[in-house]
Image 1: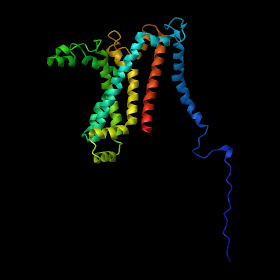
Image 2 (image 1 turned 120 degrees about the vertical axis):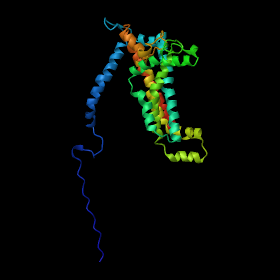
Image 3 (image 1 turned 180 degrees about the vertical axis):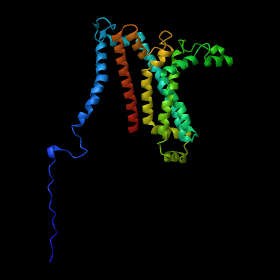
Image 4 (image 1 turned 90 degrees about the vertical axis):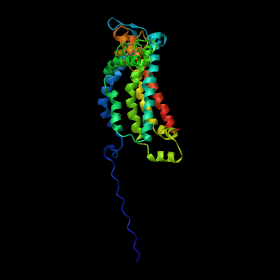
Length: 312
C-alpha cells in the first residue's frame, strides 16, 4: 500500500516587533551616534569657516568698526599684483614640493621593483626622517646651509674654484624661490618614497616575470607594470604634496619672510601678514578662502584624473 509523503507544515514567521529590521540593516538610530562628531565638526570647522566668510565681506583692521565692502576683497585677489604674484609663486612651488618628490619616489620604487636592496628598511627610515623633523628646525638648518659667508654650499664652490657661482641663495631675486622650493623637495620626497615603495611591494611578481618573458627591459617594465599599478599611490602623493606646497608658511617665514622684496611671498604668508601686521583682516580672510578653494579644486582634479585613468 502506497503511502503519501508527509507534507511539512509551514510555520508562520512572526512579524518583527515594532518594525525591527534584520541584523545588519541600516537603522535611523545610527544617525544619533554621529551627533557628537557633527557638533565638534560644526564648532571647530564650519563655524570658523562661516565667520571667515563673513569677515571677508568687510574692510576691517581688527580693532575699529568694519566697513561693508561686499565682494571687493575677492576681486582684489585677482587684481592686486602682490596677491596674484603670491598665488603664482605657490603654483611654482608645486613643481618642487609635489612633482620632483613624486619623480624621485617613482625612481626609487622602480629600483626596488627591479632588484632587492639589502638594508632597504634602514635606508627608508633614514630617507623618511625629514618628514618627522619640525619645519622650523628644517628652515633654520637650511638657512645655515644657504649662508652666503660660511654656508657649506658656497664654501664647497670656493674650494672647487667656482667662487664666482657663490651667492646669497636666499637673498637673490633670481634664485630665492627655487632655493626655498628645494627645501620642500628635501622634506617631501621621503613621504613619496614610502608611499610608492609600499605600493610596489603589493604588485604580483608574476606580472614582472611575464614582462621579462616578453623581453621587456627596465624602462618598458617600469612603464607597463609599475607605473599603472601605482596610479592610486601617485594620486595620494601628489594630493598631499600639492596641499603642502599651497599652504606653505613655516619654511617661508623662517627663511626669507617672503623676501627679497616679495620674491618668495606665498598666499599663506600674505594671509598672516595682512591679518596680524598690516590690519587687513577682511582681505586676509578673502585670500585664505580663495586659497582653500584652489586647494580643493586641485585635489579634486588630481583624484578625478587618477580615477579616470583607472577606469580606462
